[in-house]
Image (cartoon, rainbow, N blue to C red; front, side):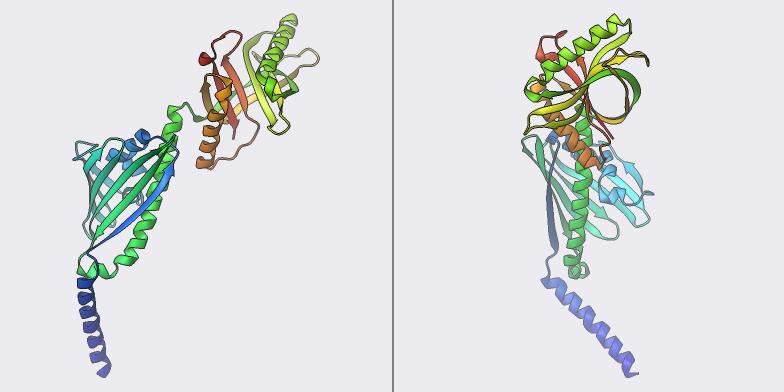
Length: 327
C-alpha cells in the first residue's frame, strides 16, 4: 500500500514539476541550418516556392511513401496551401510570404504536435547560393520540457531537407546546361593515338582529323565526318595529353595501316560546351561536380565530339562540343 501511495505521490510531483517548468522554459525554440548549393538562386527558388515540388525534398512530405496530398490554388507563392495525411496524422503547409529569388516564409500545422514557422533565405555566392533554412517550433506547457530534445531532431530534419534540396536543384541546373545521364548508341571510329603538347592540343587534333579523313577517302571508306578525341591522360605538370583522335565511321571496316578501329558509346554523363576551347575546363568542372553529387563512378576516359569546329566554323563563339564521361 505504501508503494502505491509513493507512486501516486511521484506522479503528482512530476506533473507539478512539468507544469512549473513549463512556465520558465521558452514557449518556442529556433533552429537554423545553412548549406552552399551548386546552383543559382532562381533554380533553387523554383523548388521551394512551389509546394508541389516539396514532395521531392521536404521531410514532412517525403518520409512516408503512403502520404496523400491535397494542393490548393494558388500552387506557388504567397497564399498557397498543401494538406497532407499519413499514418502519423494530418498537416498543413502554407506559404505566408514569398520574395522571388530571395526568401520564403511558411507555416506548418501538425494536428497532433502543434505549429511551427519556417523560412528559407537565398544568398548568391558567385555561381553558387548559400541557402539558410530555419524553423521556429511553438510549444505548449507540457511540450516545453521536451523542447531541447525536439530542437536536435529538428536540426537533423533541416539538414536532410537542405541535402535533398541541393541534389534536386543541382540536377535541374545541370539539365538547363545540357548535362544529362545517357546511354548512347555505340559507333565505330577510325583513330590514331598520339602524345600531344597541351599548348598545341587542338591545332594538332585538327591535323590528325584531316590526315585520317584523307586516308579514308583514298581507301574509299565512307565516314560520318564527325571528329572525336578520347583523352586517356592529361598531365598539367609535364604539359602533355595522351589522346586518341579520329572520325566516326558508318560501319566496321578494314582500315589502312596506322589507323585503329574502335567502338565508342554506352552509358555516360553528357555535357554540351559552346564557345572557345579555352573555356572547356569550366564545363568539365560542372560535369565532375554532377558525378560527385550523384555518387556515380567514372568507368573510362572522357571523350569529346566536335559538332561545330574549325576549320568549318572560324568563329570560336559558335563552336559546339559534346563531352562524354563514361560511367
